[in-house]
Length: 626
Image (cartoon, rainbow, N blue to C red; front, top):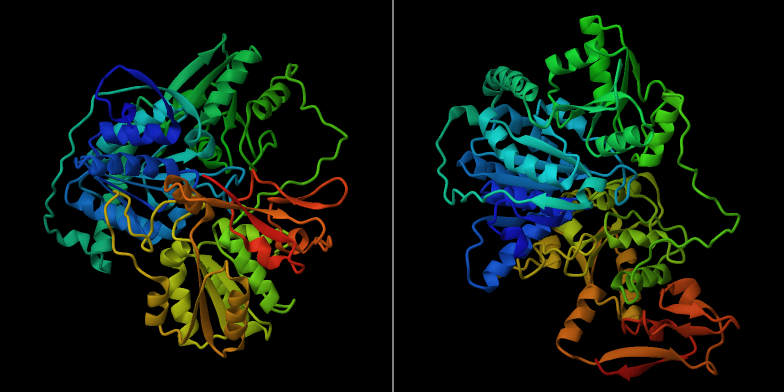
């Protein structure tokens, strides 16, 4: 973390896009940063956490407060409260996290902020790690929020740094919209001088912060005036500029975000003559600047990923101003509303529009059909043992609502313990609905982090309405999927300081659940019996399956220099029944060319569950020193 905290203006370092955002916040004098982790935004908060933990270990003050909140709504509210006290705040989340925070976000815009507040929404075109690819630029329109869109890690850093000033100038939170390709790209970053945090704020009481209907009616016109002021700022924003390629005449391109980098590169590669309007402040758009740019063109090409956010605004602007311009984009069929763009896709579209040969060859295809290699639960993952026990306890018609996390991979064969998934916390709510609609048995799954995020209300709903469901909380003591971040069920917080550990079973008992089973999934027989009892209980049952993430457990053992047990298969005892692979499905197990089954020692994490799974006692332990 030493480079990220350097106060050496002018020095150039290489940073991930997400790290660049953290650096920009540090340069702006960030006081409070909050999050609920979610890819592709996770490294922003993880970097804050790493800096804070380093400072805690050295008994120093990092200069800011950082928190992994229980969910995105809480994260936004914590940071908003700091802003009301005049402190600079940042809240980061993945795109679907803004859905969770939307209730706060929408009204927050009505009351505005005091200290600068940047809200980072990391969108995920192509669904690299998400259940949808919604375009959160529409949240800026929806909430009347100023919005910035960086094109490179350097610009992400600068937009973050200057975004706080913009927020304070407008007294409005600012939405910083990024995408996976920007968040996870690396680029050179030129450091700016560091600003000292404000450290301590003060809340000045103001009746306009209490949004009863009369106050909300009075605040809405104020918001619209602030948005009009934001449009004036957009006209002179350094992030909105016109770039010339070749010797342009009357063709212009409008673009934003990472699409700009593809547009500029391909315009140069194809030797086009165009002017490019790069919009970095994309809400509100600078209408005067856009109108003048459009007036200089007979053809306007809009290049933007996902929805026609800019395209529709330029069409409306063309209508309002009577511009005689042909607009090409998604509605003309030249660009897709699906997935992220690439240099190849932009080159292909440009070659058709400008009627030039595309010098880039199409991807080489092969007739060779490779086997499908879906992502899989790690060898030794306790979730696999839980699912195996569930399948032994339940009948084939059982419904398995699941949730967001590593355990979603239970969808894949041979476990196949995922039948429906909508969003964080939906497993238990869906279970309630299924219990009303069908007599089939229902066993739902959520992780411990998901439980604290949004799993508690549907459990209360299940208890109150006496829904006959089994709700499983897979408690692996971490937020595993996004990088092992802490949550309320861990003993350390994001600052590296001791925190109160809240037990899942205590919470569910407090919610009124009468039948609670606490199991170690690595004891498969006992876990199976626990699920049988839960299924027999009439009403709401909760099974808490407790075992640490195997990656953390292996890491702990190695640090403690504990012996790691590996396992082998006695080929004389093995009957090749395929239970270990065909039903349990651990990736460390494999078939040799002769059909015999073996364990790959490079993959085995020593959980020993295969010993319990084998019906012929063919698997046993071999000790290996650390």
